[in-house]
Amino acid sequence: MTTVSREEYRKSLDALRADVESMGRDVLGQLRRALDALESDDHEEAREVIDGDDRINRQYLDLEGDCIDLIALQQPVASDLRFVAASFKILTDLERIGDLATNLARYALAGSSEIVPEARIQNIGDIARDQLGRAIDAYVDADSEACHVIAERDDELDVSCQNASDAVVRELVAGESDRWDVEQLLDNVSRVLLTIRDLERVGDHAVNIAARTLYMNESDAELIY
Image (cartoon, rainbow, N blue to C red; front, side, top):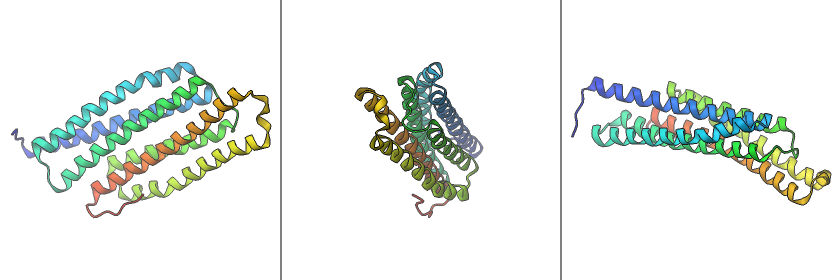
């Protein structure tokens, strides 16, 4: 078994935190660019987001390996073990958010929709992006209080998503969608509902990150879901 000094071991843990933060900022950027592509119907930016997913996946696999090595080779105990385990799980949430950003970019390539106001989708996206940014900050700063705020604010995102979904239904019931043919209508409805669903899932993953950070900070922490 490889042994290292406490100082070297601490540097390895600090490096893991910095690397997880870096991946988080990269994913946050992917989400921002995907939302921009949706708003501006920018196909070039959408393709860049899609192409960038491989980079996120490579980061995920590399850092997952680092976590496994830290656990298997260094056998961390107590708070260090909670930190590595939480980081390991947070990486999974970040990778999945990267996948969701890729989904949004693909929706942008498929075309914009007029079923619900674009501003409403962007408002949902802003909340989801803010939640993710706050969750990354909470992890980096080991901020338990911020974790609780993130969980509480998730209700705002859920309500916004529900209202937007309801708006799609009202549009259909009102018959104002008659200007589209059936195939176009179904495509638009599906794309809008998937967009709303994926943004809600971003918020769910942000709450997951906050919950794992809380566990990292407090061994007896209660779940905040």
